[in-house]
Amino acid sequence: MTEKKLPFNKKQLKKIIEKYSTPFHIYDEKAIRENAKKLARAFSWADNFKEYYAVKACPNPYILKLLKEEGFGADCSSFPELLLAEKAGIKGENIMFTSNDTPAEEYKKAVELGAIINLDDITHIEYLEKTAGIPDLLCFRYNPGPLRRGNAIIGQPEEAKYGLTKEQLFEAYKLSRNKGVKRFGLHTMIASNELNPDYFVETAKMLFDLVIEIRNKLDIRIEFVNLGGGFGIPYKPEQEPLDMKHIADEMKNVYEKMIKANGLHPLKIFMESGRMITGPYGYLVAKVIHLKDTYKKYAGLDACMANLMRPALYGAYHHITVLGKENQALDHTYDVTGSLCENNDKFAINRSLPKIDIGDTVVIHDTGAHGYAMGFNYNGKLRSKELLLKPDGKIELIRRAETVDDYFATLDFSKI
Ligand SMILES: *Cc1c(COP(=O)(O)O)cnc(C)c1O
Image (tube, rainbow, N blue to C red; front, side, top):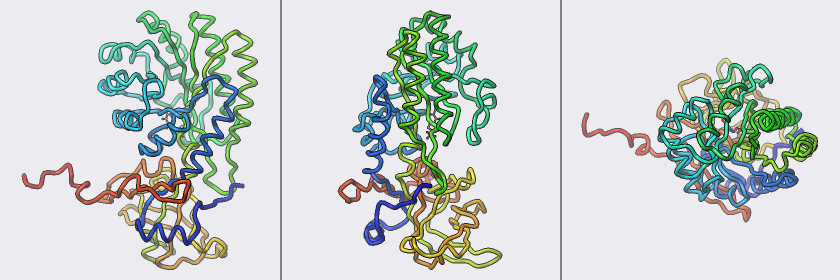
């Protein structure tokens, strides 16, 4: 069980709403920092352990900066994400560039920043050479295909567009060594929102096996393995969070048996998690503006899927708290909706909730990753602001809400 708590009480949140008005995403800095420290402690056995926060999960430079202060790097997958990392003061090999189907200008920017480049395909070695030049350090993304099972969100590895096959991986290390690459990394990411701890230990084993095989067959020493992201969070109260200390301890055992025993110590361990780092510590706060009773009961919010797309996109569960009614019986059933002209614009379907009144404040949990970030402007809907709840209880506006002028910024009305 995971208790779905709020980092503020009703009185505090009312004050925040008075000043900033709904809807908004709000992130709990104290909880994010504590979580970051816990992860670093769990992996303190590993020399130079580093988490590269997946920027796409919450692309806000204030969040990146506070994670940088906790020793994190940034995992970027596009030109703007590279710029965000740069603006947050994250530099050089503290940036990992994991992209696919990559345009030339993105490789150029990544090389210019001195980022670690993680190639998604063997043909990208030549593409990189022609467009940005070959760096000293290269990493490759491995796709085990039928050798591993994926999970529901990311699908089976053979169906995934990412990464190199095993044969290609060996060719890629040889080819890049011939082109002057001196340092090598190995990456994989084959699960998303996975809550089975053994899965990640298996992934570490798979990568350690490859590190040994690459040394034996190619005489190439891998400098780091990147376990990717995909660590799940308990969106549902009946789910348990991953025990990262347990995962790290299990990985240590495997590391000792495989890496140390084969004379390959030290091998750096990297991760590029997004969801697990900030997901549980963000909340979308909205107000009920309409109640509707037709074939079903609807509670209509002033937020919509422009602010949070996961329920519509994946049928994902996000827990909902009706502020001040936490202890009331869940004796009503609602579809909680937004205002988009799309019937899947629903934050919850057939959800048992306390009786809702117009004007109630609704808090949607676990929006700290892949929440604001997936927002879009379909139907002319504007994206909300983002707030940071500081450890001292103060509020910082870390992104203002979009305006109609932002929405029209790419149009020139004078020419019509
Ligand atoms: C999306 C993604 C991540 C982060 O995934 P989470 O589920 O947020 O941990 C990390 N690496 C790559 C390559 C990704 O595409």
